[in-house]
Image (cartoon, rainbow, N blue to C red; front, side, top):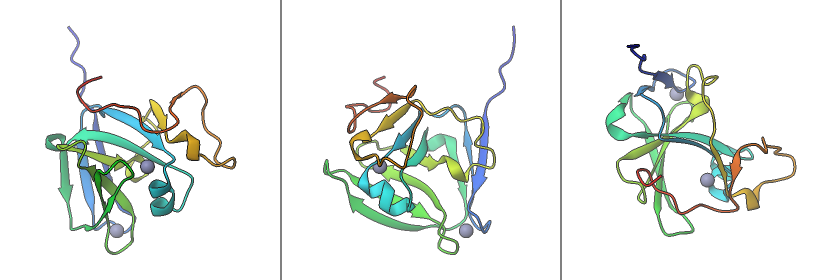
Length: 146
Ligand SMILES: [Zn+2]
Ligand SMILES: [Zn+2]
């Protein structure tokens, strides 16, 4: 019998005031090209790893910004008030989960994105891996149902 080591993803913001630890494999890792992600990140897409909230420990104070997504869900983005690093988002459509920006992991090289969403809003300068399962908008998916 082999004992599989449990993945621990440590990370934090650029200035170091916010640190976190996420335990276990992410529920899903997704690229998102929606307009909200583009504007809030200042880039072509975000890449987020979703974890159950009980597997996520935060150390530090964050500022929050809440917006209403096109589908009516409330999305809350949390970021470092000092350096502005976008740490995580919560979505009223997936209560009990946080989506962590993988660029804030101390080592994001182990992350494997599984899906690309809102590809209809992808810009031509933001080339992506076409091997990744791609959806024009948001698939009807919630954590727990596949
Ligand atoms: Zn910071
Ligand atoms: Zn998005």
